Length: 253
Image 1 (cartoon, rainbow, N blue to C red):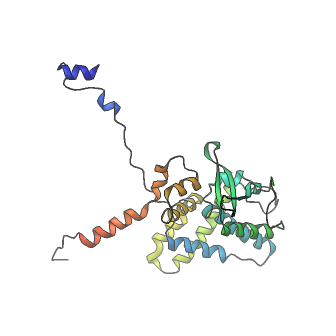
Image 2: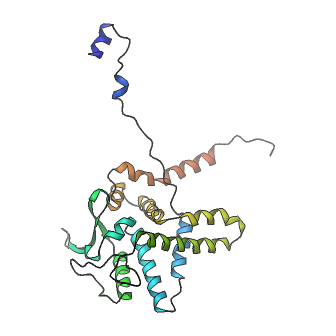
């Protein structure tokens, strides 16, 4: 009706036209992820964990497995706490190859299949052997993905997982500070890293190498626009190109 009134000359414009336009909100870029150098420091801190006593061995093994789940699997902490090892299963594909998968129930009670790569399966077997379990879980096994040290069949609490990650980041930051005061800012940022930073780091690294749809489905995003926040490389390339070609060139310093 308003369109007709505009065409007939009774109105200067359609007051409902603006309401039809979809508002576009720019997706924020993820800043809480670990640069490659800091990620290497975190891994080094894990591999340097003491393993003299049996308890220390279990602690080191559990930490390495946790970071494998967070990074290789890209899992959320809530998903790690809720899932059991019975979620791992092997399926033969249409090409005849057998592949391992991990069935996860994520946000909104949505189920997805996470590719259990050869590396993740090797870490799973390594962790299970340390716990005195068979190398591979059996179908329907209720063993938690991440177990406490005192009661092996009891899942770790979210708070305990967060504390474990914080301890690793603190050790990584301490090793960075050994290089001098110039690294204090980076060390302080590293100490701020949490479990979700590892997931963001995984998404950022993966998005540099595979199609965004793969990242979306692996991480359980509802929309591809959520996954696009990991595209840091495009911004970095634009920054480098601008820096190389665009200068004002003042003569005096």
